Length: 448
View 1 (cartoon, one colour):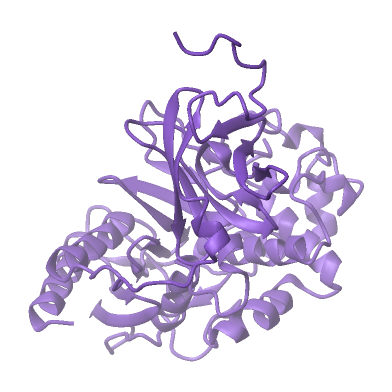
View 2 (tube, one colour):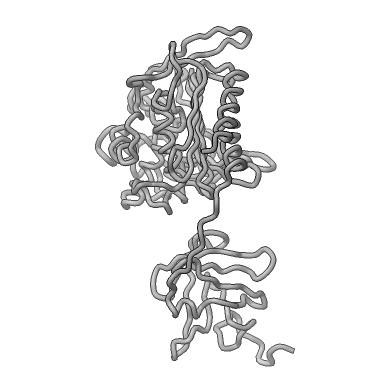
């Protein structure tokens, strides 16, 4: 990156470490799947931390558990609409679905009963399950967003039962190792920061505990580094290295629910947080544990992301710092659009392009790349969607109103395309073409 950009990033990092009174603060910037800048302020012991110093991830751990669950779904071992009872039978909250647990809409209590789980040693699954009686469900499943750490303890058990081994062994073997995240562990190994609380009225520190959370560990146990978290940030942005398909990661990023407010700024997909700012949607997660704060966000549209760690319980504006690092990079070194190049398009598909009509409303059908198509209103807002091919003359919607819906091409006896059938709506080359199977028919007298 340009020296001037790196100075601006470092200045923002330094200001946050000083004003937030963080014992240490480390950060990184990701572009196009790679760590392109990192910086550090403060001390870990007597030394400056670096990109290989471990800090706690906190709830960023949840995004890795969610990835393990989506791998099971993609293998056909479960459906997101399955009730928990089908996979972890016998709980008092088995009616909640896998998707509801992933998106924090299961209604489960936010914290496990007993002592504050983040500061006390946790028990095993049997102990956690026994503590969660019928009162553990605080809201009707599916009713609204209600953040639940407990829900991810449950998902960790689901993963373990399907794979026949501990949840972290699954995460390490199936996710961390393929991504090259060798310094992400359940407990600190090698160079790591100690977690502190900073006194609100004096510049003194109090060490925070970091016990094993037991069955609650999938909600926030892991430790990681700038280098490793940069790889994870890139993964969330779409550089999946085969751990999941890009389509599945995009599905995880899609907003399932939003935090209450007249205009939502934070939402959740399947384990991934969405932050909406200045017309952009950034994807990732934040994390906090006693003594630590963390954040990782990426803009999938530009490939620019940022991440931060601090070894302080509170005081550091970790999310705003990440947002500011991303904004700084995109303002000072904006990404160039992909270079346009011509594609090879099937002549039969090319023949479908152009003007179509839904009733009297004109639409344009375009080919994107070699085989994806888009159907967009000629003017104004409307039901625009993209479609990918799934068979001869058959496409499925990728986004917008027609996401998941099927589009098929109707042809006459000579093989000429006469109409498009999209979720019972008929698009014809001319408005209400009487030769097309318009639902309800067309007045015999025609236009007048």
